[in-house]
Length: 198
Image 1 (cartoon, rainbow, N blue to C red):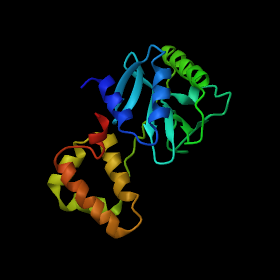
Image 2 (image 1 turned 60 degrees about the horizontal axis):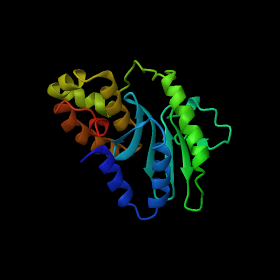
Image 3 (image 1 turned 60 degrees about the vertical axis):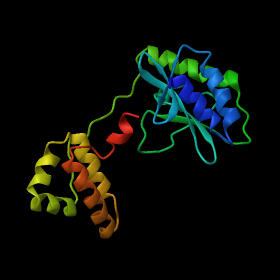
Image 4 (image 1 turned 180 degrees about the horizontal axis):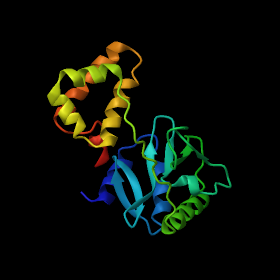
């Protein structure tokens, strides 16, 4: 199945958002962007770089701009969906009652294309240190195979596991997460690997 057919299927499977998603797709198809599917959602790229995507949610659909932080947003349409977490990504939400102004959407997409062509990109800042929660440190000290496998992971993967376990407030939840993670670590995979190549 081609990416185009996957997007056809994605839109056809919608009940609430079919018309609005098709309207956004029609706008994208007026540009030079390549239609792909990433994480199961229609994504639009320029020379392999993600520019924008569409996603469906319960109460709205979203138009994502991957380097949206650089958009002028003169009409105040964009939000940061995860303040403090998301740095470059910006989202334009459409609820059921909202009309989609195709001309205005195209204006935003064209600006995003110009920014991508100019190489505007907010680079990720890499955190150097991995802070392990106490429960995880103890598990690594007791299980040498686990410690060896964990140390062979990239710093980013190590950080994902440490944060996932450490973010649980209750000790029982931390223990449950630790047990799940130990199996994955021993297989040499990252916590979020399954989402990275969709």
